[in-house]
Image (cartoon, rainbow, N blue to C red):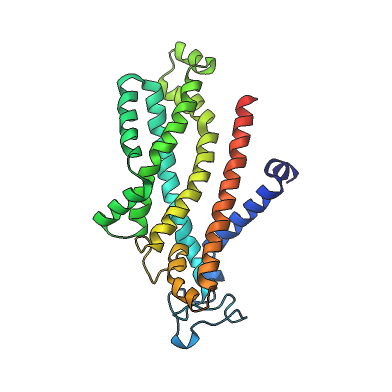
Length: 275
């Protein structure tokens, strides 16, 4: 525990605790949430903070605390889809490009340049226009948009590692490129993949929340933090800011925590490479 605290520092430890609370809240939402997040009552509209409704109720009489817990699920699942697809395909393309070089490298680089030409949200909106609004469509589109960023970073690092003795030596011994990549090259770029995934998770959460805010991601009456910020706007103007402010605060704290954790992991990875 002391080593963990020394590595992450006080702010990093707080960030890890915040992320852990959010994850646990999402996982155990069916157990913790006192009410159904999609069912409300007209007679319970705009209730204040109380023991009955911890964070009050929204304009439809739905319990805000329950919606925050259930909203954490979609707010985490979407970015998780993005970072998993991005890490797998981005790393694979980068390693293929580095190992084979030549025409393979040129082709992959041109494909990545083409993807770079499309802004993330624009590509997501185009996909949603074709396939309809949903969390899955938005997450898959963002994953495609994030691949070139991950691939470029991994490629630049793998290119340096490719020419080092620990890679050249087994190659001269006749060991296959697949084996060398799996046993030696991939483990040395893995910390960078983890760091990038942590940071990308935060960016993906913001952009998916923005799409839900615009009505292009998670659809009502489902609970989602971005959707709650949007649906709470009318309540905010009427003097009931709890829904928008609490859901927005959840997004900010989670993204900031993930960003700081990614920064700390990146520093450790760089220190490890120098050592």
